Length: 143
Image (cartoon, rainbow, N blue to C red; front, side):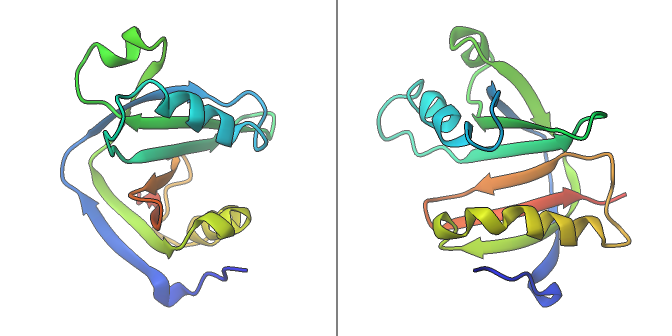
């Protein structure tokens, strides 16, 4: 089991907005893998684009989760019946998780720790940036 250590946290800057498109997951957390599979099926083979998981707590206490992928042209979202989102440029608290696949059950704990940081924005999306099959970043924008 992955355990967050505060020494693993770094502050990073995203220099420009990242446009993504994707699907809202109806059955969180069970539907996450299926949503990503559906999303990846919209891409040409071997495109190698990073995926993103965007999550936020709704007023009723449930989680809104969006499986997303980097958008390369403005028509992709509409062409694939997806919704467009923008990950805003700015400063983020970040925790890198290597070999993340067997650790997915611990991701919520990482965000719980990030939310307790005094610089964490409590209105921003929690962002999972799947850079590869081995490397993932948990990001939370700062105030």
